[in-house]
Length: 85
Image (cartoon, rainbow, N blue to C red; front, side):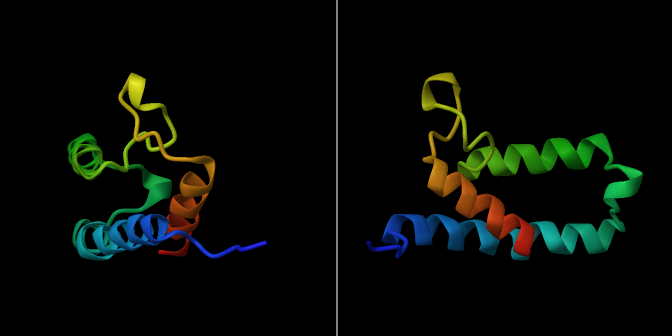
């Protein structure tokens, strides 16, 4: 059995990680964000909008309802990448 990720899955994961490193991690540091204290609504809206534009928001939902339509495997890979960042 071949457990290698497809090129498409690797590209999706790499794109997501680039966005996290380029946008989210600096935002956390710049704004002094802390999950235990919650996040300002404007920042949440901005991050949601960006993630939607990139196709990551609601990635697990079917495209028919506005989601990304990612496979279960791709959703898991994306969540794993988020947790590792």
